Length: 159
Length: 434
Image (cartoon, rainbow over the protein chains, first blue to last red):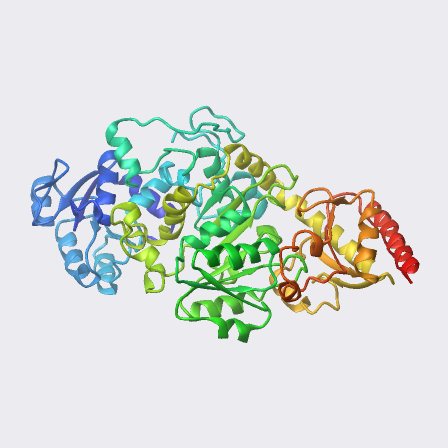
């Protein structure tokens, strides 16, 4: 199912525990490193890099493929995709084979075939959104940046 | 949490200001603190590198300021906002976030005099050139665009004459050239018009005016839609590696947040025109009742404009809601709840009549501001627009006979009583001269 609303994205993040990040980079100016480092230091989601050229990032063990991750860690809750749009269908096939429950295509990773494959295989699909931004939207971090979170409540929530 | 779209007044009260997570305080806490402690050296490093969210230093961000920013972004229907020390600093930071030395802007000629000076003198000295065109002349706007144009700028309701911009047409022209439409929405406020709904990309505000509403504090804000394609090629400041952030490419890293992020962490950081948390706190109190105050401002303005229109001492009244206004159709489209409460009129008898009129008023305050709860009056040619050359005055439509009103929330019968006294004085002045 393609998740269109903030409520659906929030529910996905609330029920997820593990993230396999395809295309994670150790280059500090790359967007994937921003997201990786945010998730690692925040600690709510257990993130692991998937990159055949990296054995680890910041002490977190990496895996060369999604299959290698799944063989050792089991199916990931979310496969987070930092790859060229043209590579997305292959990543979607590997995510399906690894038993992933959801696939998250980052900013600009837009490929109709990849979306269709994952959707038809029963995965939850998020497209052209950032896992870091959406995580921060719901736990209060984003609000410190003057961003319109869309959250209205008269209930007290610990941020 | 469902996807309910809450109404304007609900968002004015609740957006950005949930109960405080730490204390349960229901009103917005005022965080008068310049700086915020880090959890660890790693946390500090992550914050400075923009890899995590949090508070560092109030020049860049502050929890009280962030609440004001989120509330205003919600009311404008934008992605996010950056608050600044004033409306002029909001404009400066908006422009410097997308343009640099060698670039060009196209702006309406019917703008606040301070904006014409900021663009025409200060920005020009920094190497950013502006072509001013009559805002209602869409062909002139189109013709002024160049290869190095980075944005088109207008005011929803022009200062001082109250003319109304054709926002959708200007947005289409700007987007056709690959550049955003920046709209100063100070006079309309998001209650009367939300320019993003008509295609605008960036909104600026002098929050000093109706948003604060009580003439107490200065403040400004930039709101951005989050939908402009910054990486499409015309704006390398947002889509190439920045030496100000060790090679960070804002569009690639922050996606839809590229503009609000760069405006805050690079331009606001380096310009330093930050709002005080105290001011942001007061502006939040103002926003809470914006949706109650604006209808009364508009009703009083309509009654005052109608009164002036029927007086023989008055040569003309430029208020877009009047039936014979040339801007009536634009006002009906973009300002269906009313054309604001700031407009101008001309007195027979020119400069002397204007002086006699203003000096004989008892309730209307003679000062250089608009959007106060109290009614205000000024003679632009000798005050707000006095730095403009004769040609610029003419281009801005500011004649020596013009008086600008900002209609407040008093009992309108009292406002009209006072205006009658002023008009009688203006008439006596004209008769003495004759």
